[in-house]
Each structure stands twice: as C-alpha cells, then as structure tokens.
Amino acid sequence: MSLPEPSEVATAMITKVSELKACRAELLELAKRKAETLVDYRKAKARYTVILRLGEPVTLEDKVVVDPPVTLIPSIVQGICWKEKLEAAKSEAMYKAKIVCMDALKSELNGLQSINRFLEDLPG
Image (cartoon, rainbow, N blue to C red; front, side, top):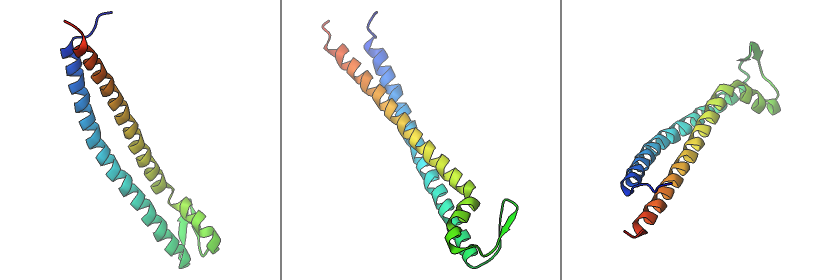
C-alpha cells in the first residue's frame, strides 16, 4: 500500500472544508425551519385550546367536538394539531441529522489533518 501524496491530502482537506461550510449554511436554514415549525405548532395548540374553552365547535376527523370537559381539551388539541406536530418533529429530526453529518465531516477532516502531519514528518 502506497502513501498518498501530500497534494492529494491537501486537496481532500480543502474539499472537506468546503463541505463543512455548505453544511453549516444548511444547518442555519434547518434551525430556522425548526423554530418556525415549532412556533406554528404552539400557535395552533393555543388557538384550538381557546376555541374549545369558549365552547365553539371544532371538527376532528369528521366529528364535531363541542364544549368538551376541560381535562380532555389538551388531548383533543393534540389530535387536532397532529400535522403541525409532525412537521415540527420532522424539522427537528432533519436539524439533528445535519449536526451528525457535520460531526462526521469534522472527524474526516481531523483524520486528513493527522495524515498530513504524518506525511510532513516523513524524512525525504
């Protein structure tokens, strides 16, 4: 097995740095999306909680809910807002996945830096 050329390692390092920069930009967008979907979910929960507390009718899967017991309102609201909750959960999962991706890229870059130091220390 032959050793890689220092220029090959340097090129790979430059590529990894570029990938990290792109990943960081994507992470910022995913963080914004995560925040927006969480706000949407919380607003929907608040809106439907108020509607149900006021005794106004709300439709849940073809059923009309009117003036439910106060203790059931949080459960009913969660059922009504399931789409918003799903979007918030997906956004959070994508955000966390991007962080894992960045960590993997950083590990690869660290490995390339170690190889680069090893090649620099070789005689000749």
